Image 1 (cartoon, rainbow, N blue to C red):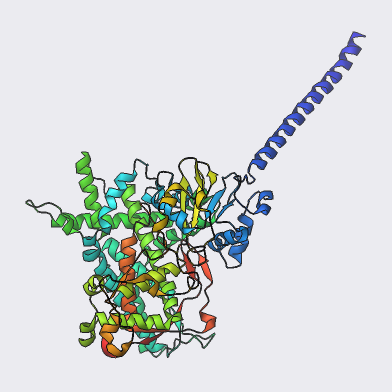
Image 2: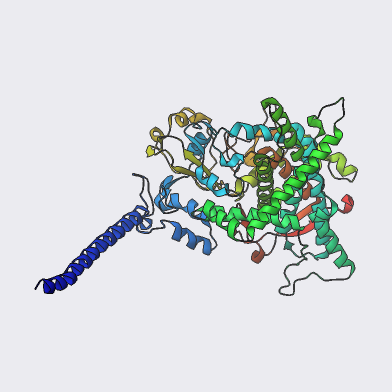
Length: 621
């Protein structure tokens, strides 16, 4: 009996244990599922109260991202989508949900409040963490990744402080910009003569010119094999000498010139630069770039880029040391490029801080590369939009050319190009006005990002600390009429500065009008506007002065954290624009080659950038 119950009891006990295990496992599984569902739900958008948003995004784990992706696939782009929100919701302040488990971003489309935030509320808003995440995988030790309170910030500023001084820009940057622009003009002269009055694609040349300029400014005069524009010129000239035709086989309405491969080391630089596009389009930019660097060939490009910069720093150090004698010290006048200046700065900082200089330190490497990134893309893209504008406004283009010829009359008589110093030092109000209007219309960078450093308000709405603010600089109040905003909901600093704000005339704010940037001088009584009194008097605009604050425009930002390369950008663009208009008439291209559709990278690039050129005069030969 005992044996019977003993043997029969074991299976019963086993079943009981199995049942308990199953119950326990089931309970754990249910708990895990509930936790996963709770975490999953936390990933859905959680809007800030009172600020309009797309209601459909609330029911999507990825928030607004699917709609953004659709815009990108249809060729409109992320920035265009953001620019449409204010009109869609009839509000200058909206919010968007760009990634799961992330705070909503607030989008502001109002010049007055944006300018106030950038210039007067700098303790409340600083460099955005989203911007830092975008570029941290590329230049982690550069200024663009740092808030103003970052302990590294001051040291990095010291490292780069000489690069935007008038002396450096005039003596180092300007000659390189002028020389490379003349290379571009030589290339386009040849293309214009071979194209038989047909258009040819221009963006690649402008991109190469901008790259040539910034590399020359950064590293000094390039070796001949590294000069991109000259290699292109030699290739086309050789083909022309051999009797090759460059007319496209696919269509007869444009000319297709061969492209010369970039030097190997520059290919790696551009490959790294292209990761900026990933940074701006990915919901998780830093992990995305890290994975690519770690598990794809992109890691090799990063390594080659770093080695190239290291090699150039070594050459700079050797060159600077060769100038030093027993009785002299290294001085700023020994600098031939941005790298020389930064190496000298590092030596000076090390001496001040009582340490050995580290010219290969990560911050110097990253600041150098950021200097290249910023000076290349923004310049090339702005020039691309500008040459499109030149063809679309023939009267303004003619006025600009007459203005230049009136200012540089001696150059006309001598049948030469205006010199670098003539372009930089001669007051040229209409040239400045045309350039500023081109900057206002360019779509290069139409968004500025900041982050709330404390709990604050925008237009009466609470903004929690850590919220990303996106300011649109190419929509309402810039090229479209502003929305009416009650004065009492604006910030106190904005209300106090009310009388200092100038707005554009809504009737023509969308049109390209350089004259909007000019105002009469206080001493002028009248101004000649017809050619009857003589060209020099008519087109010097001597009774007018350029007013950079004539109305809303923030293409390069505003305030203490605006574009660090602003002075370099304006200097380069002034030289390039003046010389291009001096040498060429930009004729209209056919509609099928004149689309204003754009592709978004780090900047917003026109999908079509063709030029149809006619040489102004053979006297420049």
